[in-house]
Image 1 (tube, rainbow, N blue to C red):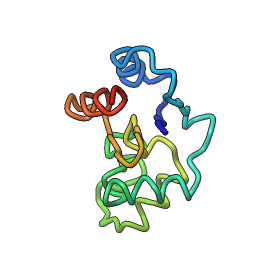
Image 2 (tube, rainbow, N blue to C red; image 1 turned 180 degrees about the horizontal axis):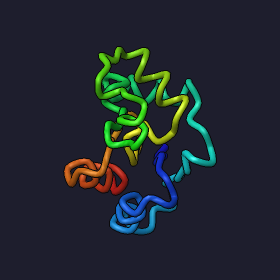
Image 3 (cartoon, rainbow, N blue to C red; image 1 turned 135 degrees about the vertical axis):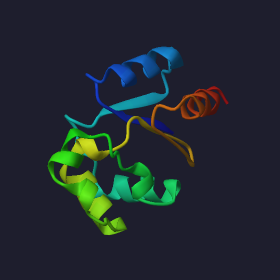
Image 4 (cartoon, rainbow, N blue to C red; image 1 turned 90 degrees about the horizontal axis):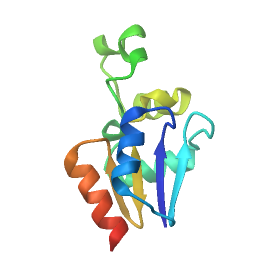
Length: 117
């Protein structure tokens, strides 16, 4: 099983999909059109080790909501990601029991390697 959660209009996500090449076994989910379910998010957090690891502080709403000035707990990260898709650090790719979060070169390389094995 391989699934990537991303935004179709995100240039970074488009670039990463291009770098990965043809991946017929990869299910690509546009999180703007298909909301992440609580069960999916809980599974991601279990693989990642925390909800915070999945949370994007680069989202425009992070500053506009004044979140930079608040102390957030794991429950807050979970709630915020479920309420607003832009808070999910993208892309998130799950291959079997491994998770790759974000667009760092190491994460993209790990994704590619996992998909090829």
